[in-house]
Length: 325
Image (cartoon, rainbow, N blue to C red):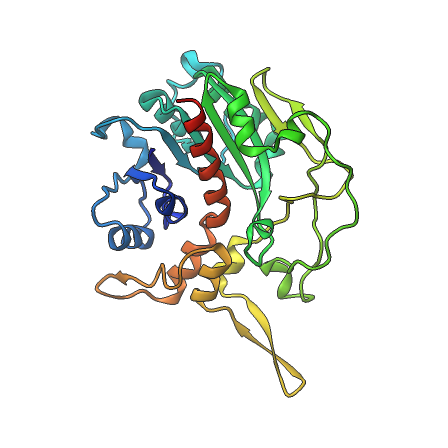
């Protein structure tokens, strides 16, 4: 499968999907340091730059997946007719217009959990409505990186769309039991997971989860949209919790024990890469004719997606794609 990545950053999608045989058709990134990472790690893949200029992109061949996590800004889409013609610099709306142009079979869109409540939920509903009017069946879920093998709590909203078929989209994000509506009731909260990086600077990190996913499926924004909303239970499997990106960019502190006395030190950029599931020194690249400084590395890593989460999603899209052949 070939994918087009927008708001590419340091390419968590490629770090996740390259090893499973997916191929990037192009990137879209404008920040200086992430562009240096892309140029070093993927010298043969074109970075098209500003995603608002997508009409100029000369991409040959089929695009199977559009992937990206755009900033969420308040906007209202009055349906596909008219609404998507009004480009007000809104990158979520631009994402939908890119969908309209390239018509990939699949898309993956990522954002922070706050998008669910922005403007009373109307912003998120508008985004889903625009995607639906383009002919995509949609599922969304909050996934937490701590349940995918990395030692941080980081919850993010993932929206998966499949052209004309919400069931396949839902099968990517949900297990069959969840789709049958027979979700298991929550038990005790987990006590063996590290706290978020943000919490480590104050009280040593909270334990457990701070919002749960075992409330089943609820229809939203039309009959072809499936979502998983929080309930009063506890998370099972892929739970939810978050990490503050700015905390990573600041170089957070962690306990260091020596002779029974406790001191603190900053996480190194390499440790932050590991927290996101990247290979060591992924961001240690030439930048402005010298080795990259720690500051831009922290910021870029913190703004990225968790690689194991993207790997899980990519593997399930591949599986559903093969079944449809």
